[in-house]
Image (tube, rainbow, N blue to C red):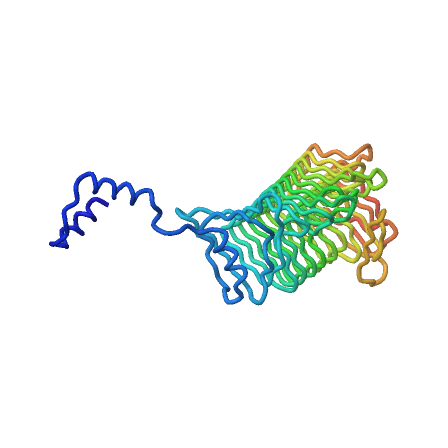
Length: 418
């Protein structure tokens, strides 16, 4: 700065030389005055409200003074560009909620302390793409679907992001997806993302998906993700899926997730401590780790599969110290009809005749210190009674502490189909 002042004075031959005291005062003034007005709330809201803006760089932290406005009239991309490469924080001030959006892309942003009756972002028939973002300590109350993202139709892509300590508090109503809720999406891709300590609470046993809930997806893929310490007052502590065409869960870790029920009459329905899948056509679980998950209900301490006309394959996965109330400390499987009511939870799938399903436990699965009541099914429980066209396959052999209830001739020990 001193050099610049000297050069400026040298360039102006008629300038009056400054005294040392004056020059020092100007130098101090230049240090303490900002070069430009900083980025703030008004800049952020102006971008959200201006329908002519389709791309906006968030250049600093923002504390809201009201709920987010609806994002209408165009698709919007928000990219965090804080000084020195930081991630800008959008703070809901623990009292403001979210909005409805068109197509949305979020990159390098952090959203914290939202508190409202709707998720931060709700989309209908549009796509959402989330990259390198953090969502932390956000709350939605009153039976909302998700505290962070709720999408109906469209496609979902989430990568390299963190969802930590988000909560749906239902106050006696049903609710789903502590962090993410998707209904009728064409494609859902979640990769290299962490879901930790998210919750669905106050649903009296009717909640679904402590971290993620996927309903009627065309295809969902979850890869290289971590689900840790998520909880649901209902089904699927880490995640739940219902009626999807195909689901693939690959190379992911599920630790200390839990499903429980605050209503005593529904405790037996609190299944799938880590994962609860109901009526998906094709399910693949491969190369995953399940440790310390718990289902208070009758089956599926780690994984619960309710199969109608479906195929499921589990391979190369590790199940350790998972617990179920009665059956299948690691995995619980059963056949279900196209319509079923458990307690007040009714499920209706496409009616295509009697149940017929196949489940395969292929090579590479290991089981250690899982527990399940006194049934003797500490590792695996399969109930495929009254269906001669259904079956279960083990490769290369049936593991110990497994209870298989199936028609004669429908249990196969072979690797041919794996």
